[in-house]
Amino acid sequence: MIHWGIIGAGNIAARFSTGLSYDSSASLYTISGRNEEKLKAFQVKFPCEKIYIGHDALLDDPTVDAVYVALPHVMHKEWVIKALRAGKAVLCEKPAALNEEEMKEIAEVSKETGVLFMEAMKSRFEPAYLKLKELLEGQKVTYTEASVTFNFPLEYFGKTYHTINPGGGCLLDSGIYCASVIADFMEGKPEVIRTWANQYQGIDIYVKSELKFDNGTAVLETAMDRAVPKKAVIRTESMTIEIDDPHRPSVFRIIDANGTEEIKVPYEHDDFYPEIHHFNQLLEKGIKESPVMSLEDSIRCAMILDTIRKGFTEYSEEDAQVIEQQEQLLRYSSFGAKDALRLGNRIVQLAQEYDRGVSVMISRVSDDMTLFAWADDSKAKRNEMYISMKKQSVLDSGHASIWPYLRYKADGSYEEWLRDGVHGISGGGFPIFTDEGLTAVLCVSGLHEGKDHELMVRALADDLGIGQVPFVTKALI
Image 1: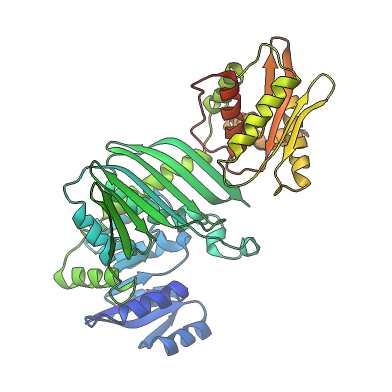
Image 2 (image 1 turned 120 degrees about the vertical axis):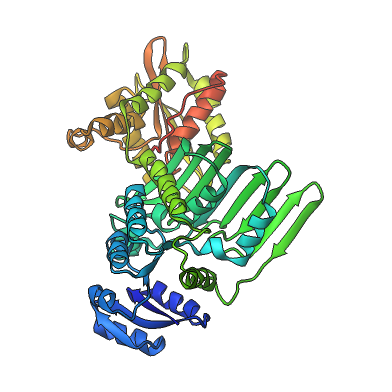
């Protein structure tokens, strides 16, 4: 009988305990936490022999064979390593670590001590996922897409570990599931093609990144500010597989030359049981590393997230130079009212492709005359304020409103630049240059993730008949 200890007594520990109860080869022996009253309530619901106030005491108990780490993300590495060094096999709730460097530390300790460690990536163990892996055996995957999103109430921000740095944000919380799917089917190290991201109180609440791998491309999308359908798509040279709810799959569809076939493979007991049973089998057989979720798999998942995260945390002078290149390319010989009408209408047309409405304004610089103005029905009066800020940023800097953000983020002087009284901290304002200099300012407000800037550049390129315009690969937050 394998005796389990749980470090942490939150909701995820309760779900783990339910899954563990289905496996006759193991039992819940003890749980540790900081609050005795909470632990006693947990013990009533999930009977165990002992409770410990403090995690060290649990690790000192010689009866404990395996530990499930159910703590906030930022605490994983510390207690995983302590448990491994105490000789306890460790199943750690995802994400196992905050970054690739931390995960490598964990892997080194696991190998050094010879003690089993596995990241609890439950999706890889679900019967449906194992079935689709079997179907894809021998197939050449060329594209993988994974999207796991949910809507987290803004009033809870700063009150839960999901929304406090370090360790918070959607990329670590639900994005790790997406990274797992991508890491399982894409080969080599990722290279960012393009990243879109949005933050709230310093926490990433939306991330979408297009990535290039040795065998094709992938798209990862995760969010805490919207609940779009959760899905994954895997393409080979002969078929496409669509997976519902990739973080807990039970249904997928195969689309090929013969049509569409839906395959349903229900859970075995619940979505936690398969990974727990797998881990118990590894322990019983003395296997030191999972072939399904190996140490290298966890390192690679963390590396994918690190690669994406750099796209909205690390900017360079070259990023600002891309905006300057756009400004040089997207110039008119002359620009008047008819040009503003044509350009404005093109923006309104392209805006229909996005997930929310926009406000648009084009102003002449010489006399501040409004040449074009339009607002979607969904827009509020405050959008006029945002447009005013973006316009002022263009006038103050002589560049697109995103340029100061990139330029001063790169050299670390962004906060100082803001204190100087310059307005505008995001994309959405673009200078219209002619042979006579700065002639007009184009402003778009309403989209997120830097897509205001993207929409303007697309419309300007279309209006000017320019095919290729360079884009910043990083997020224009």
